[in-house]
Length: 64
Figure 1 (spheres, rainbow, N blue to C red):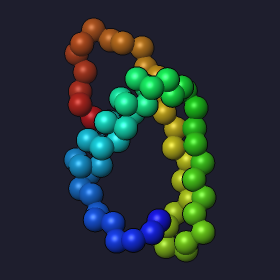
Figure 2: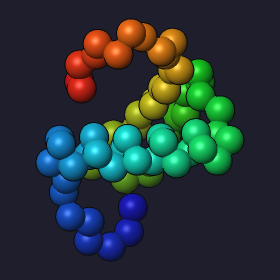
Figure 3: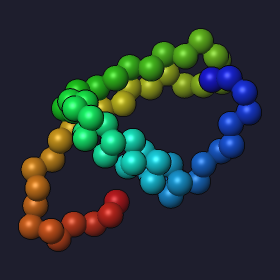
Figure 4: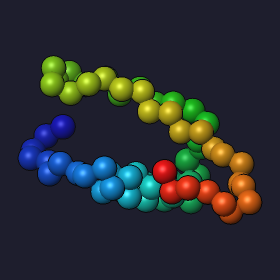
């Protein structure tokens, strides 16, 4: 990552992630897979991000 990045709160992170997933789905990005992100910086963790498509429910769901 380059430049100064403003830290996000958990709520801001979830909002931006939700928008990214929604736009990606509308643009044909497939889910039910994982992505590995390995970073050369020592102070940034390597992570695996997994997104799984869920079956639509009855509308009774929790936000988190």
